[in-house]
Image 1 (tube, rainbow, N blue to C red):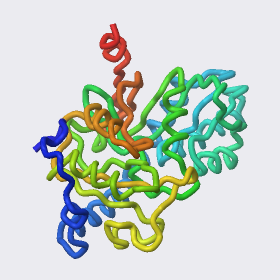
Image 2: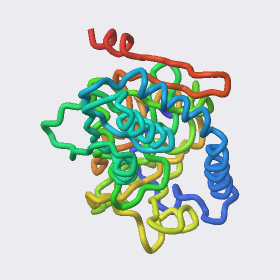
Image 3: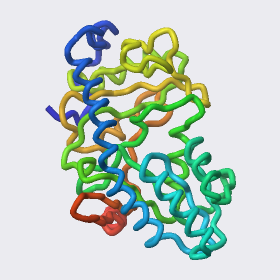
Length: 296
């Protein structure tokens, strides 16, 4: 059953009720699914490389300030951008990294870097997405392992500030209805109350796990002895949906209403181009006209 509205129940469930049994088969299905996703991503490298090259060749121009995204495809794009700079095909580029990984990749590729500032004017940002919703091109980021030095807040800020946003995914990540998890950054103080409110919001349709810094899901739904803290000092909840999400934007709206939620991994209502990489070629999609039309 899709979850698009607040639960009619005003009472909070006991925490033990909404966290699954750590020995349940459901938990192991989730872990297995994540492992399969990692393995299958290796076979997507050639199509992602094609998508990365297309993104640089089609959207990068001399003199641009570019937000350098995070993820496999973004890494390929950064490497290719570095080769184009060295060959002289592209000139006078400045990169603003969205993460520690993208900064490291850019440094190795020889892409000049600058730090993000509130005054930064970003012409283009490219970034991986974990999944993109068909039609709307709403997306989820941040499902992959996040180190303490990473920041969804910085990543989303750079995406929002870009004059042009390009998201890169494989064909299997472009879906009519989205499933899986959404990462949610919350204040570490009173985190339990925030988690209970989110569970009440999506009553029966999602499981709430506090992300661990080590051990992954094996650490348990409470995050074990070493829960993850972002560099801003926030905890990360993985809101794992057990039924398809029909509208990511509505889920984002609901999360934005929760006291204690700082940010989340949903990108919605932002004009963007999606480059979808498949074995038989690339599919290029754009939601700009649709987004601008909804604002009239």
